[in-house]
Image (tube, rainbow, N blue to C red; front, side):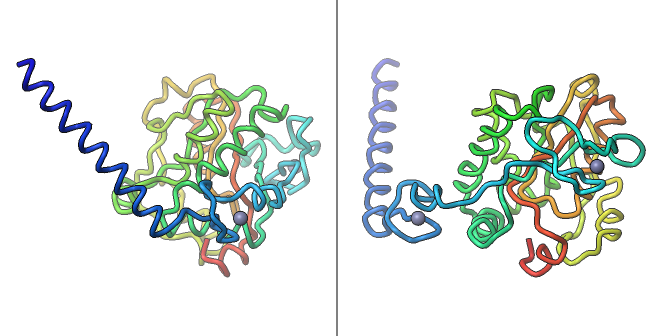
Length: 260
Ligand SMILES: [Zn+2]
Ligand SMILES: [Zn+2]
């Protein structure tokens, strides 16, 4: 038994060694580079480019679109009843060209390190802004299971995981599920978007929702139809407060133009 075990140990360490050599070889052939400037960089975005990226300092009210500064909790207009299910939306950054390119790489080219890059920044915001002081956990917008299998990752989940480490809040990944496959929202009008996602989500673990407050995480929030539909289900299950955080907030036209 002892020998058999050591043999296995030996072959595992040989495999690890071969993997390391292979990785170094690939790095030698294709040195890791910054996705924005192309210069050599171990990080997905080099420090120089990261420092040049602009970030925003406020969220906005999804009803009146008024800015909500980081040091107050809710919209001064007080639209928090009726049909509005989201307290506020907090985009990290403007939807300008470097951010747009990075989001595209994350969503469609499998450059998953982009999620970590933005997720860490989102985590810092959640840790530092009064906006978020009463929220208990992150809920990433779920993909339908077929879509998840096809893409192999859920970008919102990856963002939430990186944010969770910085903000020291848990990520609840299996509390809300997408019960219906929905077509891409990019070409749809605001009303069509709302209809497209209606009834698409379900809370499957209501015990984990009742009495708690949640930050819904998505890569982009355009009209807010998706996050609002999730917030509606969470509130039905007894959630106290629900807000949303995202990398950027494209207008509907921008979302259509760039297919994001
Ligand atoms: Zn760079
Ligand atoms: Zn408002």
